[in-house]
Image (cartoon, rainbow, N blue to C red; front, top):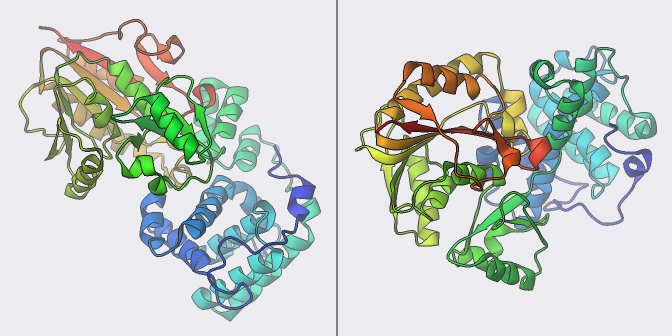
Length: 460
């Protein structure tokens, strides 16, 4: 699939780019300067969401939206952009400093994919930032490469690799070794659908709180917000693009919170009995605890990070939640009394969230499966010790990988004969997301993040 057609590449907007906090022909704009620092943070191991929030807290909403489009978009196109650059940089990208490579990537993305950005701004701004960060020599190289990309935009498509895995990796910008794993399991055609879904812009889905869905829908419509329904989760509302969430009256009044349908499906699949005591041992950022609190008598929302617990506390305060108790605790050694239901949404590779978190695909390493797998087994075993006899243990991930999902459950059940896999009640979730009693949500089949869950009943 070609990223854009020739007419899109050649378009020249008549208006100034959205990130024009500083003159495009003079100093670098604040948004583009922030982009360079965020990409530096990612190379140091930071997560995109956290780096973005930290580096953009002085930008206005318009600049933040523009910068979000630039960074998320570039990361979704990175392999293809690298193929474009590789044949236009003498000696290849490997000879360049990583900071310069990232600046070239954002420059190319602005030139070829952002219709709001004139070519002179995309080139001039990138050159100016490169000069500040890496010196005049690097800036001259960046200038020459970006000008060549601009001149050749009508014939920019790089050669397609002969190997089908490499071709998919270039066309859809995912690591080849990840694609190879998926192809072995699902086949080329199905995997390409998944890759396409992962490169679609992520959407924001809201859950109503202390208000009916219809009333919330009316409020959003009156505020001029475009919305659409969510097929697998009847009460949820998907927002249109470009909505400043925190500026919505319904948000400020505590009448909604953000939750992807995949996360909602995990809680619906859990199918807890009303009035029970629930322990959510890996609770941050807290949306699953909020969902469980709709039916539970009380939810103990625990996380080992005090900072994440504080953020949950602030979020719950906005919603005036009364039946969630917060706790700083390590899920690998929970110091709580046995509960009716224990949820462990364990740390995982997050391969089901590549659309929402495009940096995750480039951060993932083969060794992560062994490291995270050991942690998942430890957390699952520890959680089993705080499930009451007759109680329910729910294991979940946002991963698509068998190593982190089915294999963990099969290994746990082999070690713990007192637990059995239990299906939810009929109608708790759509049959389309059930696989032999397990919850399996796939981005390209269900239009949401990916998710997995298993309900494990302890014998009385």
